[in-house]
Image (cartoon, rainbow, N blue to C red; front, side, top):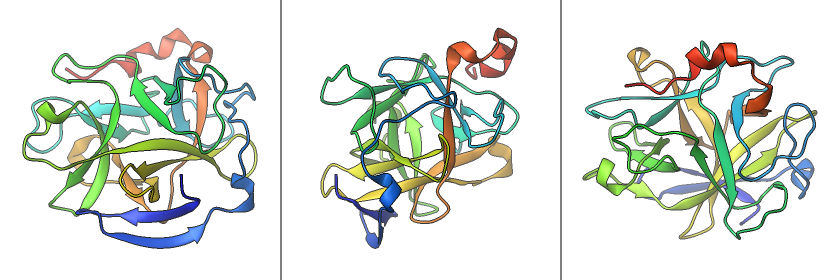
Length: 217
């Protein structure tokens, strides 16, 4: 992938921004507790903080959708666990800049897939993370690309990026509240205010939080 990040809105308009900082040289990605991030293992993606236990990612119905397809960050829940797949079919640990697929462990029955994808919102001119497939988004533009993880600051904090298949241009994922009734902030493509996260091994989250991790109906 190109080391240059870019901001994508709709219709593939890009504005190039700064090069990645020196601490984004290729290096292993670690979870919150300092263990290597492993493909296929289950993790919660939580806000970067000293003791994260909530603020995870969930799914909800937005707009006219009858299926909970939009990924939202909700400060009140632990959220839903995800797994990472290295697209080169490697079984090695994940390093920064690796092309990845990200998907939730479970999905609503109405969703074609649990894998993350980028959806263009033609009302706001922003692109956001959802799940599913083309059948779930009739008449809506989907952006083909790959996710990747980039180092951010000290400790085990990271940012998630997305790069287009067509050009290799990339952007960070950030947070944007579209509507207070949506139940959280969407993950959008952005050149600024990237969302800083940590990865928490799902096995380390107590089962008492499972009620906060249920899929919406």
